[in-house]
Image 1: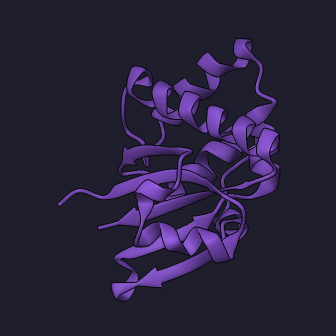
Image 2: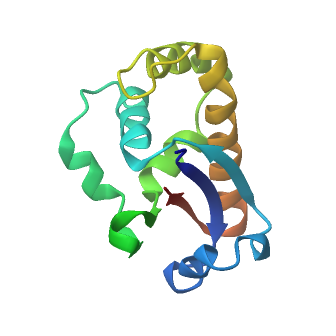
Length: 139
């Protein structure tokens, strides 16, 4: 069984919870698999050049949980979006290599690179539109 993971923009939590029922109505979205708030918090720690700590997960509030946690929506922290949007091209290779090598990702940098690129695009789009970024998961 695969974990679906979509990252999308919404004007706020009240609107964002509707993604679970009508994902196609959200124009700005990135469809992925197997990405959770744990993966994202690990990336954020790497971007900040700090050790991962379980408290980072508290920065990803869960705004929807259904079916015993099989479907969730988390809002990405605005500080992480700011960090993503401000990443310099020269730093991307190092960040993606470190992220891919984590136990959570356990993949090749070439597999993690498009995910990071997509997250950066979403963060920059959120900044342009004044929206927030959300992570929807469905098992």
